[in-house]
Image (cartoon, rainbow, N blue to C red; front, side, top):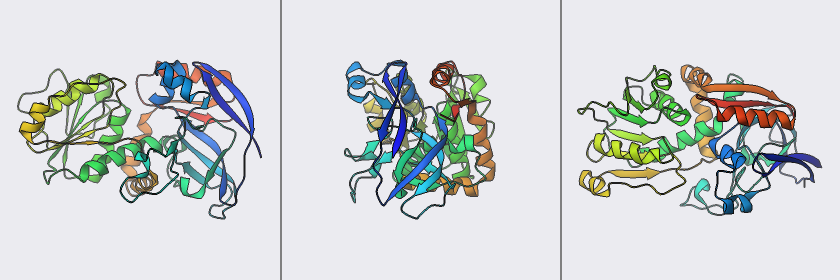
Length: 341
């Protein structure tokens, strides 16, 4: 079956190509309806990734956050028109020890493997998760990022001690907001402290118990467990503050992505007996857990609507360019496309 794919061939240059897709008995054809831009997509679009990486990965269709409707299911699992979230991680093997999103052999859409900027996405039933009618399309579009935060929380739960009194989150951006909203729902009896740089962004965390600007943290503030949701070189300073602020034998979840090495005071990590957990991406189980959370926490589901910063209908390649450029100047929230290409 012929399918039109919109690929980034070099920074800020897209080309539409038509490819002949192979259809198998387990194939599910999905029409993307709403897509959301991630920072990783922007790094490819602007060419801010290492040139060797760009040469290796491009040409490639961008976007790994999206929702769509089933057009044809050869496996007989889904109904035509059913709304589904598309899981970007695509494992090629099973491992009893290593989760699917950490297997080196796994493929990931929009990272060396075509993403969702296509007329149709050809998937399999195990890479699709039904989404509730109650979840707005613009929130369903970025379920992948919510699942990443859910995965990071689940990983920290495996190693943190029994002190759940106060969770601290460093980062006032999208990932920080999502992680805070999930923690507020999963641990309603725990206190939630947010540490950020931008007072306007911190105002969105009205459900937190305390918010602090990172250059004005009271010396007596302590947290039980902490999440770093900053990324970049800023993660170095966030982790440094966490080490000072966290209680002995607490656990730190590192979730922000940094392209360059950062320093860490390992002496204090050892002295305090801290545990550090790293997490990246997510798998089908995390998507299922996220959908379950959205189903059982209507208030928190509503809060996720506050994170939609830009929303536009995309019908042409020029629309795509202007949307990516507008997202670069966006101060808050996710950029969501109504995909009509």
